Amino acid sequence: MSSKHVIRPDMTVTAYVALGSNLGDSCATVHSAIQELSEKPGLMLVSKSKLFSTKPYQAIGNDYVNAVIALECSLNAVDLLELTQQMEFAYGRERSFVNAPRTLDLDLILFGQAQIQSSWLIVPHPRWTERAFVLKPLHSIAPHLVSDEMLALVRDQEVELLS
Image 1 (cartoon, one colour):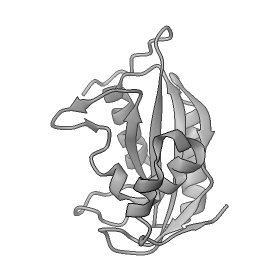
Image 2: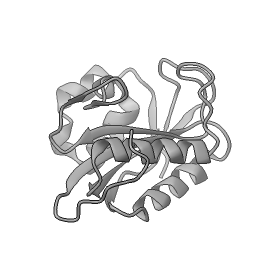
Image 3: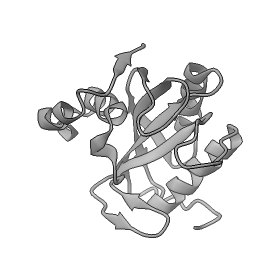
């Protein structure tokens, strides 16, 4: 991955990022992360979902606070991934084991129409269609991306609108 974020002002894509937290003041963390992302060079917040509370799915720990945002992005996908991972680290994210509780989780769900398969980045996110905590907030800001059939497949996952 690169160490310097390359901004391409003449080329932008809409990137969708899922945010989650289940340690500390999760609502404040998610709000703060959305604000911070919207202020990063090469990123402009287009829309944001409300916050949702979700039971851990394929994970353990407290309930999660989740949201999804759409960003107009002039970074490349690898630089956006690097930026989100730096933010997770700055917010105290520890990767002690797979799906461990976390102070902040930022997942790049979609990056325009890109199909990326590498050892460190897969876009679209490989499990986004299996997760109500992604689909419900995403549906609220981009209903054209989430079908009724997709929502029906995750209806047994507990998701509650917070704000």
